[in-house]
Amino acid sequence: MTVIDKALLDSVSEQALNSRRLRMNFNFHQQLDDPLNRLLNAMEPGSYFPPHRHKNPDKEEIFLVLRGSVLIIIFDGDGSVVSSTEISPEKEVYGMEIEAGVWHSLIVLEPDTVVYEVKKGPYAPLTPDNTAPWAPDPSDVEAVKEYMEKLRITGS
Image 1 (cartoon, one colour):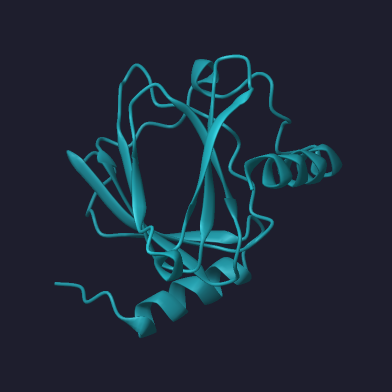
Image 2: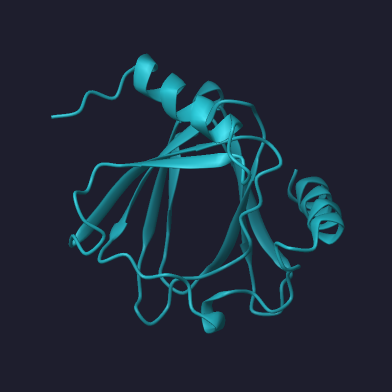
């Protein structure tokens, strides 16, 4: 049994702050091939979540924000923003379920943000057909920074 308390959130947030990608997972599932993946995802502003989808294998994702806030952005197949939703316990918007095959990303709005995420296992790395061809590659730091700022402005 693992208790999800402030100490655990603080520990994972500290690891995120010190990681190159400004995020860190804490997995509750024992193995990556478990039929249900459950994890904390601690993240900091500036962490890039390239737009992606989960299709073939189809997987829904459920996010519950435990602390902080994120902007969830939904795209059409051409990369146009369809909708955006700020998820924040302080705003009484706690989470979102994203259907399989839907293009999405998120922007971290506050330091020490932690979400609880659930999706069907086993873990499958994103394949090229599930990564958005219209979004910048994570290695292009300047393009990523500009893109995230554009999404933040468009989505707010």
